[in-house]
Length: 584
Image (cartoon, rainbow, N blue to C red):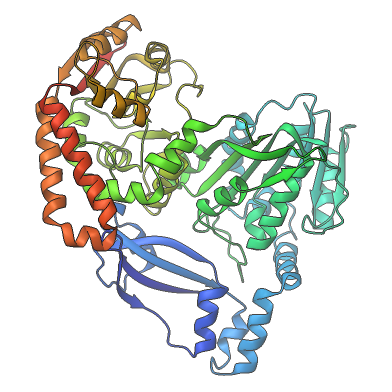
């Protein structure tokens, strides 16, 4: 069974406001802190609430922060007297014992493997319908594996095994439930390049050679492992991979997706940040002392679940094994310098809940109104940040939004904020200069103060043109500069930020050269100055609270940064452009 404990939290003030909890002795409290999984949601303005969980999840992330602790445990243990220390001692041992974890998971899947069907494997009554969209989508996301060696972990009854075997040189399908892997072999054993193994992936003596696999594939596996088991498996996966090989895994995050009834549910519905951190920190060395790590290729929602269930918690990752000195400097700069998690929250405090670009919700409303969005249209947000603009468009205009950003931290926040909104928004960690979409995919491409990071804008704008449907529009706001060479101070700022700025006329011409017509280019610097001053005034007025929630250093950095932007913009050096263009 599950117990839900809700603690309301004002994330802007970063202070605990109130709580709904079950009284317990200290041992029970220790369990809460140490052993039971935690999932973050949110609540209105830090107010205490005793609403149902579905009601709480309907609250917009722009107005809420709540901590929801889902406790999954044996029903009988909780039906006994909570003060019985022997019961609780036994419960603690079960929670922390790795062997017991495996036994619980095996019992769970033995229960749900009595019927060897797609519905049983996906734990959803709509499994057959979802499978028609979800399986092709997952396969389309995989890096090329034709003629490669594939290791499929948690292979189940073989939803993906046969598809993998059609192209791979060899597929080893592994699952720890014997009846399940036998069913897989029955369905896919006719592929001569497929082999099948019944084994628990956590067993230390699993016979897989180092540097022997090109693609490791798993679909709903890590959520059935403890944190330590995930960490150990990640280390082993890096060793099994050849250099240049890939890892694909997909997990349910935050909360349950399937509607199948479950007597108990030992699944670990983690935050995506956990998986990203574990795999990003993996390191391995070869016999010559060379160091290897994983580079994140993408992290994204499964579109089929966003489309059919308005659910962003089905998330997949693709990693590539690289030498540790391979260049990933720009993404590292974004996540470790400009857009650290603390920096994002600091920017959000200035720009407003859900936003990290100029003017927040006010400029978003003004600019989006110019797009004349219609229900069912598809919007691509390039540099989506933490998702505020995407939620606004989806909630108010019933459009389908795809938000991409190169910053892992940004997308992590966006995914957290999407919980419970039930709107058609999906997010992906992606480089817009490398991302591929079919021609004529989007009705609108929207980008706010992002393309300043891109050096080759002409090529990007030509790509935008191809991605847009005929009649589609692009709307871009961006930092610009006056014609001619910048001053030394401004040039130093541009270098430090990694910006590539153009004057407004040159920017407009690049859009025309890409094929766009009806190009509107507006100098919005006066509006930029007004917004900057308003934001600065608000921060200075709220100085004590800002310093309490962040630090004196953070306060000084924001105030000095905003004053510097005001100075550059007032002098005419830094400008702000708004560009709208259309594809014939």
